[in-house]
Image (tube, rainbow, N blue to C red; front, top):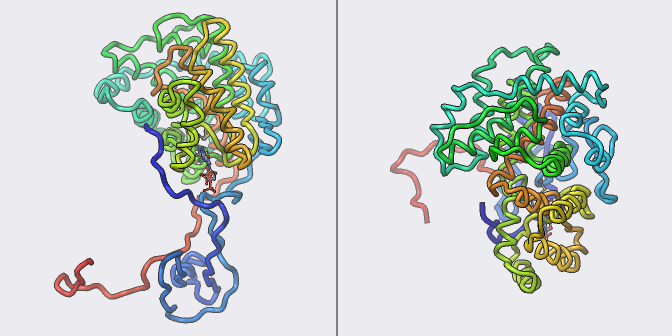
Amino acid sequence: MGLTSPRKFAKSDPIVMAAKISSETASPLGGAESAAATAPVSAPGQTSQPAATAAPATAPLVFRPGLEGVPATQSAICDIDGSRGVLTYRGYPVNQLASHSTFLETAYLLIWGELPTIFQLRDFEQEVQMHRRVSFRIRDMMKCFPASGHPMDALQASAASLGLFYSRRALYDPQYITEAVVRLIAKIPTMVAAFQLIRKGQDPIQPRDDLAYSANFLYMLTEREPDPLAARIFDACLILHAEHSLNASTFSARVTASTLTDPYAVVASAVGTLAGPLHGGANEDVLDMLDEIGSVDQVEAWLDRAIAEKRKIMGFGHREYRVKDPRAVILQGLAEDLFLRFGHDSMYDVARRLEAVAAERLGPKGIFPNVDFYSGLVYRKLGIPRDLFTPIFAIARTAGWLAHWREQLGANRIYRPTQIYTGSLERPWLPLEGRPTPS
Ligand code: ACO
């Protein structure tokens, strides 16, 4: 995944299109939807065509690109105060969770709403541990994937394949929900680690029951038992990536969930959405960008050039934050802990210089480092290959997606937004010989 090419960036201001919607033009079945379709409006740069019948204006449709500021759900899972840089999961500040909790405890909190008691936590940990293995059929399927393919594509396909093995769909049975949650939290890391070994031509290794969640994942990935500090820091990274309200992949999960499909399809659709470079895929691109900059003395000139070329600076900017992402602050501290213990990384100096120079150039626009800016440096120090950064994000975010899946089922209505139609008015089909030649 390379840096995004220069483009004209969309303005965040809402574009108000004077769509004339009238209850008189709505069909009994379609309501506002069919009214919108019969009331064409002009898109920017497009010549408006006369409406077939004039309809009185009642309510203008407001188009907000990227749904900025449009509430698309009610949720009690996660809150972001973007001006103060505060992020809470079920009311608990994420920095406290990263310092004191474990990923599995945080996942329990997100999905079931409260911190578990010692017995609930032990049960959950045990259940997850018992379901870590994946069928040999899934491992064999992964052996047929091209080794050159991106691990996010392998993960999306593998997550979806779980629906073939666990096809019973009882969405309103609490036992079914618990089993699906446990399976997904348990098996996603195993599938990420399995693909890593398979693409190197090796057989995946089985999980180890004596290792906790994060230590076991690092073991399955590297075939070595990890240093306890490395495992603890990795676990804290999972906590920081576990949930972030209605981001693109979570929205995708909720839309998929709203159709009442199975939870494996819900997670698979979210994995596909997370993969893009504007979302979870940015962590990989940040290191490519730091490589491209090369050294501390190149930072200023590089940044000026990138801004002049209207390039996006990867790992910077966020729809919700106008200050530095609180997760970036914590991840930076975790990176420093790792460097103290395992040796410095000169790429960190480049990153810090970039943050300082960008604060002058982009800070006034409210653009600061986001979660992806320092996470890659942590994973690099842990020896994790670059293209596994986003799958690791997916391991963590599975907890958030499942929390939203449960919440969506609790008050479900299928997502079906409307649109502002900008195409041609109804027109007769033309025979081949009567069609105009394109200019
Ligand atoms: N570098 C340079 N300029 C930026 C950046 C950036 N990283 N982010 C936003 N801007 C500027 C845009 O150029 C635009 O300026 P303009 O109004 O003068 O044209 C303005 O800020 C608004 O930018 P949008 O792209 O419209 O903001 P939006 O809220 O839609 O996008 C996003 C948010 C996608 C995160 C954006 O900041 C971005 O592309 N960042 C880089 C990719 C990245 O790091 N993604 C990870 C996000 S965190 C996550 O998903 C886990």
